[in-house]
Image 1 (cartoon, rainbow, N blue to C red):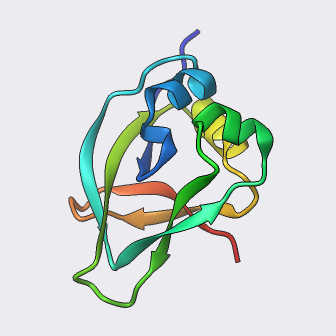
Image 2 (image 1 turned 180 degrees about the vertical axis):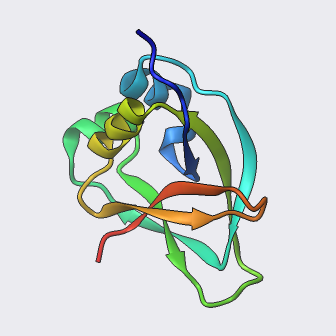
Length: 116
């Protein structure tokens, strides 16, 4: 039985990589470009060897609120099943947490931000 892909996930980083998608979800995701106003990107050192091996990168971008509505983080909105969203949660290291946001397009989606 196939689960409905009704969760929206905004990715601005490694989840846009086909290799990460195949390793995390077992399939290539298709999405649409979008942006998140009021945020900027910083780099986060990744200490999880499995995540570094999957992404091929020791530093990943992390979205941070900037306080400036003119700032934008550009990325891609993907449609996932609830099971795939849980797989994305498992892929992300503890420095990230999932949060609900409203994108420039007006879509409401999940994205990963710095865990406080």
